[in-house]
Image 1 (tube, rainbow, N blue to C red):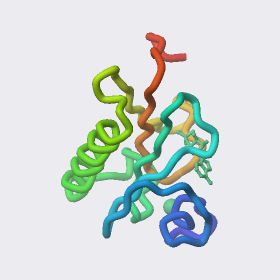
Image 2 (tube, rainbow, N blue to C red):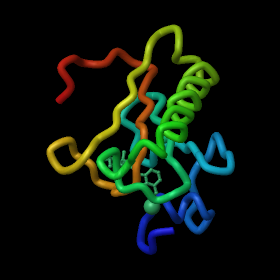
Image 3 (cartoon, protein in one colour):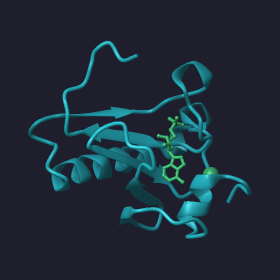
Length: 115
Ligand code: AMP
Ligand code: ZN
């Protein structure tokens, strides 16, 4: 738990979120400011600042986060039409919450290159 971290607080049920998946080390919830019809965040419960702070020991955790993301895409019916996953890292990418998270976006056509 990183005091002051909003995603740690969501993990510990100190802040409400529309959770759609929970396990002992991963949770997923709807983004509060959705950028697509489906916009879900998948996070580790443990406070990892971003991918730069992850190491070899986190490989299984991060792999399972991707599997969970895929399962949610199927569950929310955006798998066939297509979806995008995004992991913003540091300032230029627009990382605003310093707790590792996968964005799952779908339900509309995406632009490429991304903004
Ligand atoms: P990023 O800009 O990549 O760090 O993404 C952070 C995301 O967290 C943004 O899409 C925000 O809308 C979302 N967000 C911030 N606070 C909350 C919250 N309390 N519940 C759900 N999503 C949030
Ligand atoms: Zn945190």
